[in-house]
Length: 230
Image 1 (tube, rainbow, N blue to C red):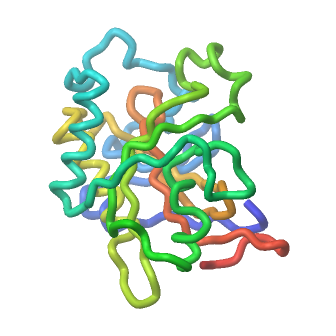
Image 2: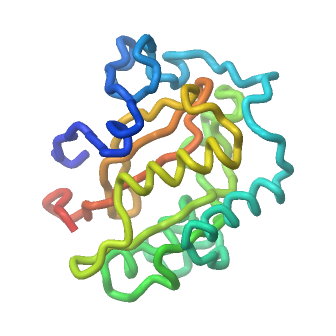
């Protein structure tokens, strides 16, 4: 984390919806839940997978799932943009596009050029070899190639598109209204994300033992002296 202390994420969304903040006795991480009796964070291995063989969500084909996400984000004011190449030709520090944010690093995230739309939504094919030794043993949790469904909002000192509360709200609406997941089945685990020269706190939604998204609030950039605020 580059020496950056993690602060509690006290979001209005959680407080207004009745979520309570708890600490998992196994991993020691903090999470938010609607169930005051819940003790575990909801992520494997603290809590075993419980979605296998159960219809926790509506059924979608790959194409249907992609379109459902992109259309939902469009209905919430996002502009759909085309996917970028899996070879990160615009970067000299990465060979492969390993996440959707790579599409916009470093030039958009540094404020050097405007994003293609703001806010935007994208379905980005990704190749990730960092966890290749985990492919298989984690029962499909790690893959070398996957499609990242994403939405991005780029804030500037002069204009804020949206930030933490709206980001979590959008996920919660999508999970409950589009996927059909029950509110009480979702836990939100506090974390920290870093990659491609940027970092920031994140919220990781867990459903039935599986992390289904990473909601990153990227507010740091990497320098030779460590992370500094953007």
